[in-house]
Length: 184
Ligand code: FES
Image (cartoon, rainbow, N blue to C red; front, side):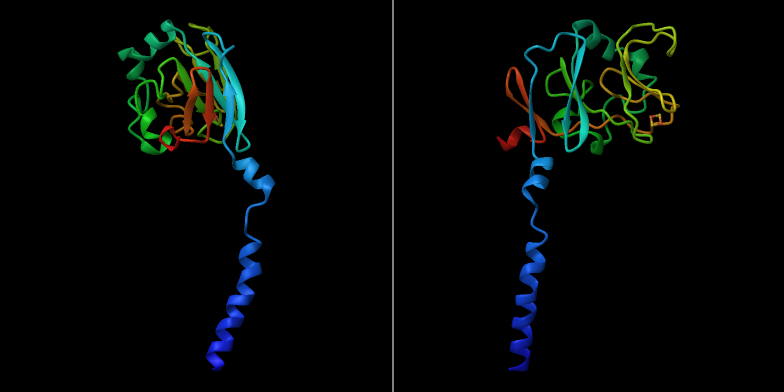
């Protein structure tokens, strides 16, 4: 009997405790997927959306930019050109473009070194960057380089490629970030 009362008390006390951990509406909104229209996004242009408090880039790559990503010369300079590190992208983005569609790249814009936001530098052969720069991203905080698929170069402070978030195409012109394609 004593055991039964004590057990009931534990359960009763546990209810408000658990309830206090239920996510608030605001918390749910902060973690919710976000949609973005890419209808007006032109080739070689980048737009930024916020997802879970983080900046996320959407880049529309041009045919010339896509071609540059296949260069063996470039691959030799990268840490993980074929996206073997599974934690850096969902399986459907584990390819040389690190994306669902080759022309549209979606990347969390946070440097994998210490968290700065890299800058988009599509200007080929930029004199202030690496020799034979093919376009990509540069983190000015400590000098890390990433290519146009957000793959990190060797011998820079950042250890890994930028992260690809979960995302899907709702339509040709709308992307939803925070949701995998198969959860439609
Ligand atoms: S935070 Fe980007 S190189 Fe250090």
